[in-house]
Amino acid sequence: MVRSSDEAVGDDAVVAATGQPRAYWFELLDAHDAMTWPHSDIATWLLSAQGVDGWWAQSLTVSYEQARGRREPGQREDGTFEVSPSKSLDCTLVRAYELVADDAERADWLDPALFEVRAGDRSEVLASTPSKSVRLAWPTGAVGAPDDRTGRVVVTFFQPTDVTGAPAGKVRVAITHAGLTSSEDANTLRAFWKERLDALDAKCSEG
Image (cartoon, rainbow, N blue to C red; front, side):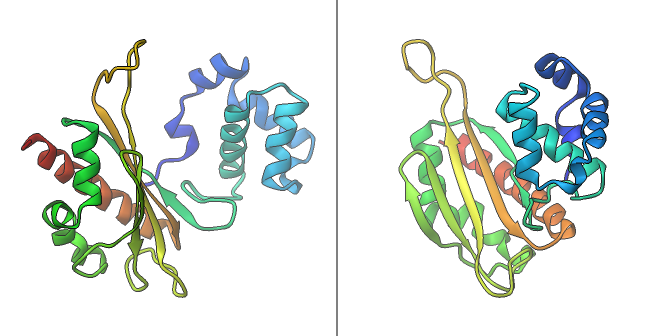
């Protein structure tokens, strides 16, 4: 199930970052009739008029819109949905990227499961940046795909480093699937991509 912003970020973290709990900000926004404002105006007001950090202004805005019924968890301002599961992998950055970017490698951990979400039997890379990101096609007719265009699946890679710039810790991989047409499809694809990340991690562990 797609988690709400409140579930993803605890209220203690909101207080630590903004000085006030969500309930305070929601009441303040209600007092200014913020539900009549566009998303961007709410975030801008929190940032400029209330001094809330930019990231937290966006987070509070999404939480407020979800709490007041303007959007569902995982839903973007344009009405589409997005999921972005991630996982730490037990291999190098170069190897992790290769496993996603290379057609033959994906045939082991991704392609055999595509039928589960009506996405054909072979994945396709649309664009890639070595060791940073891979964009995959999501065909029309697949779960979550719009009727008039292919969907968007972007795999991103992050390697933590120490103070000298040397790799430190496990590589983090996130799969962001945007442009989904319903919360039900978002829940299905969140579970699908979490399973595929587990399969990718198992492939990493093989060396």
